[in-house]
Amino acid sequence: NAGVTQTPKFQVLKTGQSMTLQCAQDMNHNSMYWYRQDPGMGLRLIYYSASEGTTDKGEVPNGYNVSRLNKREFSLRLESAAPSQTSVYFCASSSRDRGPDTQYFGPGTRLTVL
Amino acid sequence: GQQVMQIPQYQHVQEGEDFTTYCNSSTTLSNIQWYKQRPGGHPVFLIQLVKSGEVKKQKRLTFQFGEAKKNSSLHITATQTTDVGTYFCALLSGGSYIPTFGRGTSLIVHP
Image (tube, rainbow over the protein chains, first blue to last red):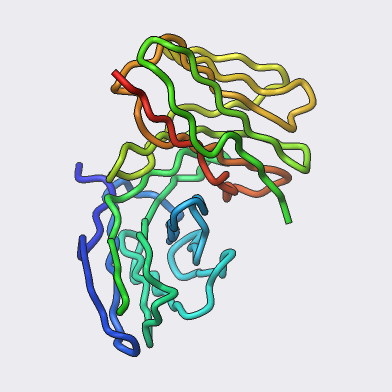
């Protein structure tokens, strides 16, 4: 099993460009998440999806959109990138079958917006 | 919203010394999780604590959940260079299944 995979690993954008970060998991998990990590700020939740077909805002959703394409895939879109969105983005998944469960993280996407 | 404070932000130790990171919540918790992130890597789950006063051990790592379920600690005995990384607590309260992460404690071990 690959676990949680993310593409791309690195990306450089210019201000105003758009892009989509892809995430997929092969653990048959119900819930998926997108976090951003900035130095000294820990992990902040952008959006999450409790199950296929549902998405909800997290702590820092502004400037982002998400799509839960199916049970395996959860994408994050930046419509008009800004320098403040320079960060490391992590996708995670959890089964949540019996309450709070372990979060499994992908390897991350390192994004720089110039 | 739930507030979480994790201290210290950084800790430098000599190899062989002990290390402790603390996590404090403004609200009573249902669960607390701990994760480790190696430099350049992604967070990896270490453990989950559920019961008041619970103590769990993983080799040289000891995790403790406070009696009031508002704080937790991670203690590493006799640090090694392989312990280098950032340790995060993740808090869960009420009926939420979505953890709130602390800002992490970065451990630097000098050989």
